[in-house]
Length: 526
Image (cartoon, one colour):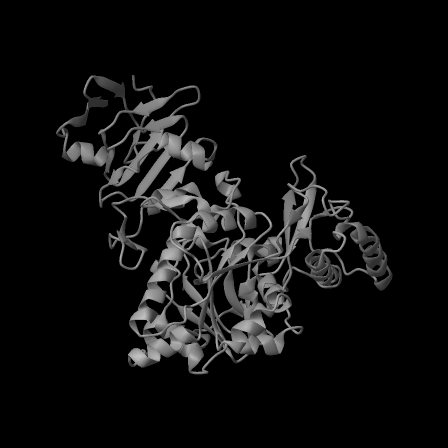
């Protein structure tokens, strides 16, 4: 919806409307509320005066010379150099999300991931391992750990930290801005007062908001005064995003001021951000789906044209950021959404990944292994990461590490039955044992898996027809069709002649009518 440029008079009229209505959006006597509306007004003005869809002909994919393979990075020479890096480090986790795609109402960071730990606990323990290392190096100062919360996550996150058995003195929380959504047709703010529409009238305006917030609350100056000028930012749900000395060294050596970790793009990433060149190759910028004109969406999703994906693992020289504060130029994301009543609205956001455009000649993309990008955006991702056949838990590093060398199996779960976390955990109380030959798992409809289930074969597909229920007993073995031909009988549980047998429970399994290499379970298992 990139509209024709507005006239100066039209812009002035819309701004006057916003200024009149925004007076009641500021909580009386609240400095942060006043700051947030001022920040939002700048974004709103940019939205009114600049196109937020790119001119497709003016960009091109990031060239090889503007990225480095991780293996090309210089190594840290000795223990003293590593100690120096750790003494300049601050770790920042972006903790503003609610996990609404999984039906979560609380902070996503408090969702259990694996080994009885939630995302927040994972990253806290990872950080404590770093601090313990510093103690072993006879260093008394702890590495600061910052949590950028949103107004949606702040209270529950702080409560978790307060109730945690192990002290978290090294943790400091701060909150990103609270901005009003606007109606897509009139551009008027959805809330009419600062305390109006608390559930769907407000939103956090993207992770690029972090730098003005850090500056406003004095955090940026304090970190720099302490010699903490190497900042590592990452999403809190990405447990693969841990400190890396070789990437930190590139910043410390003054080679660059901004590093964005990228990884090879897969079909699962085609809607996410990628780096491109603009201004005749002078600078890099982040290109995301809302920036792309409708007629170029298919081209944007092409794995041949855009080969890398942005992990949102970002390393920044905070001194360089301070010098550019007030001058940062960022692309606008106008995300189209709907209120609970169905009315269309807009959320104006700016990405921390797009900050890279402000460092021409001083920015670098580092191509890293996929093990540094293990986010959870849906219950399908949880299915992968909770599987003890696909990932093992390294307690010494507090990391989930991929076990098998082959690609992870594609997992497709029907949204209605498995999209919400509570439904997912009710229907799949324990992730099945997945043999190494499994490439694809499809579970749709009213299906319940017992515990101790095993999947064996290239394609596993369990589909319950509408009005039917499939409840697979504990300790069942589900073979794909080609495995059934190889091994017509299994110990303890078998599939033979279209039957699943397990103790006294049995149910029919029908072959796919299209002759594909899989089973379709379409009858209720008694």
